[in-house]
Amino acid sequence: MSDLVQLPLFGIVLTLTTYLIGLKIAQKIKSPLANPLLISTILVIAFLLVTGIDYQDYNRGGQIISFFLGPATVALGIPLYKQLETIKKNKIPILLGTLLGSLIAIFSVIGLAYLLGASRETIVSLSPKSVTTPIAMEVSQQIGGVVPLTIVGVVITGIIGAIIGPEVLKLVKVKSKIAKGLAIGVASHALGTSRAIEEGETEGALSSTAIGLAGIITALVLPFILKYFFVLI
Image 1 (cartoon, rainbow, N blue to C red):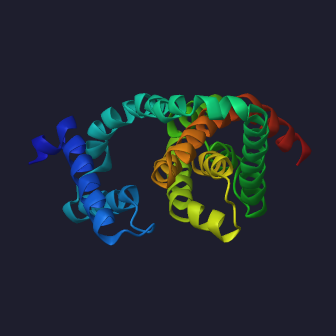
Image 2: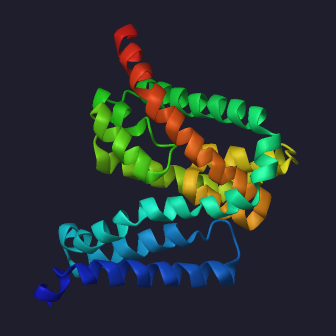
Image 3: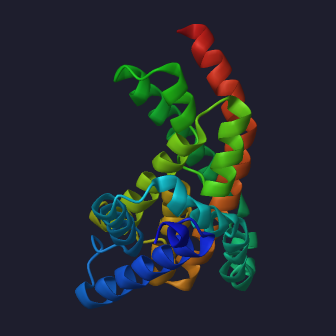
């Protein structure tokens, strides 16, 4: 058994199995709270705790799955291409909306973490939490963050956005498909985009657009924002 769990295949099979279980539960319950990734994460943690299997053994396979995050993000360009005309016609609102949303996401997490007494390392690590995982990991490395902590922030942000994002937009009576897609994409990256695609093709395409733009904006401005933030405090 110990030899088996040390194989990368173990982590891959466990991850895929728990995710498929999460999908089945989500399809049956049909509730935003029944998020497949959230269910899968809980099941994996429970399994490792009950069996006493070391996380490092599991992560040998998890790292292989993580490699495909980049290609999976690129695949979100398919709905984007289908809505290319809509994007061209609304390029100025899209650019301005994504820029403003990205800046709000950055300043809110930095400010809140600081007010709650977080360490410099924690603030830096959480600051790219609103962009998709592959970009967040690279940005975190460049600015001196702790990558695993960054990933935790990204996943929690994505799950919360996917669960409550569309409901919040309904509550505040946002009816524009473009606005919905941009809001979900900027706030909760790829996980939110999977939910946006369920809302409609336009929402999914605009959410995909926001992921790319928010990633570029964050990578460019975050190092400067952090530099001057720590100088001022």
